[in-house]
Image: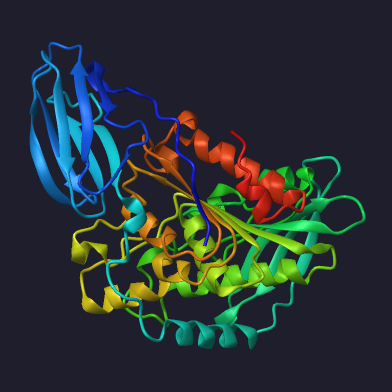
Length: 423
């Protein structure tokens, strides 16, 4: 196993409400076991005192107090166990946004909260056999492309239980065989797929497939999505306590089928098949790559769905917030948990996490990342919340490195080329 850590170039300090600034003891925000971790706090304000709360793994309070804005202060902790630290600082002004700080203590040692189910592999092998009983029957409907030199089409395939998989496909408008790229979507009530998501990649030279995570048409006006049933808009609640009905079952199987579809095309180069996704798209990417060995590289940004049983063991877990209202719910969640999927991944993998992320808490992502087998890189975004709440600057280390990966993979490179990270 080969592992690389690409550190974010931290902004030190980061500005926040009421001119409060926090400077981490270490620029990386990553500390060793037993090492003092924390921040020096300075304020240029005549406001009343700030209140802070220090959490371990975004859940357990391990410190709290007030900060006098008239004098420098410190927030610090020393831990002899691997963990993530999260600080929330607030004042009495409802118009100002709370300030968040994050750090990691020996994150390379973080492990899953609980063991995986003994029948995890048998369960998924059975579900893949079920999927294969329904032929994909792909149908392409060519559409006008928004980019010259790119062919574009809508895709429909058959799926389990009479469902359908809908998506879009784009490729360079020339003869030849091309490296493949499969894109999975983030969470939200169902929404249309934007043509540029695939045509931009096809213009670079990729044969690109992008599917809806739901059985909905991909190109309709907003009124179509607004009129969908409430149950579908709240899809993460479907089958939460039943692994055979859980909504993520059909989603992961659809992802598997999308990969199979791309690999079946005569214009795929037969060598490079990259999976990519953000948030729930990253969650899908981790588990689809675990299920389908045809994937040759994986790139995921702040993936959700990790360490679902964490709240039972002192750790926050994020979307889809499966835990832990009943034993059946948290037992069901383990079959769809990226921590358990990650242990089956051998493809080169790039993973990011935001230390301020409460949608996809970094403790779970690290627990998943640490289980990946083979070459892997981690991008710790020490000053970043979840992607939709973050600035371009906060996400820049991931944006830069994922772009480098895609360029290398597009040109036929592999692990050796990925390891030669430009300085």
